Length: 222
Image 1 (cartoon, rainbow, N blue to C red):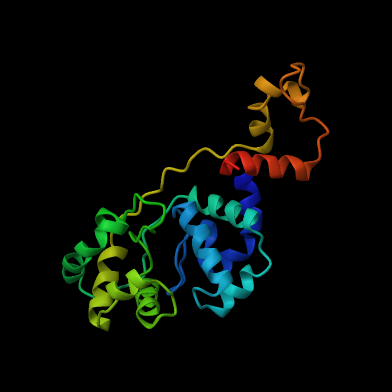
Image 2: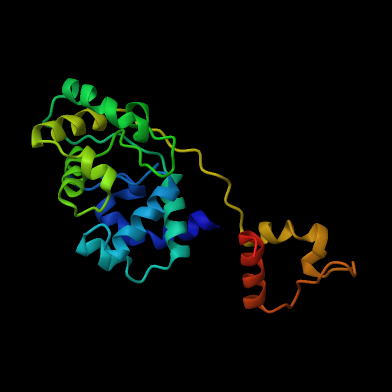
């Protein structure tokens, strides 16, 4: 299924991001339990250079969008764990400063919006590096650039607070296999696409490129 395919595609990620996406390397983010939509967006940003990281750009250069989705799904359904890396900032100061982050990243760093990553339990060194990247423009995001206009001490305190919070896995929508999707078509288009209703077209043995274009047109309203 898609999760197992994602696990296979993500094999090369373990060296940096840890077994099942739980990082034990300082400065490397854990991916386990992050929303799949966010992970796909992040991978695309690295691939396009919107997020500047030569290693990530190289690793993702040949990864197709469909495989990014499978990789993201695999990591999203793994059990997240709180970072055990030491943090040098003040958790108390970070909690006070982190109130401004909750609107996007959720209470105590657990995001309920797939557009924004959860920060709870994340590696503190990575969180500081991410803030610095937004501040310098290495990550191109106008909103975060303004939010990251902090000194190093404030960044370390934010990182100390969020890294100490307990991460929670997102609610991942059911991912159907191709067979399961096709079975949903049987009611109108017949078993295995062999329609017996003259009002409804048969899909069996139809050209794949035509079907793909037709489905896209229905989805977009064209």
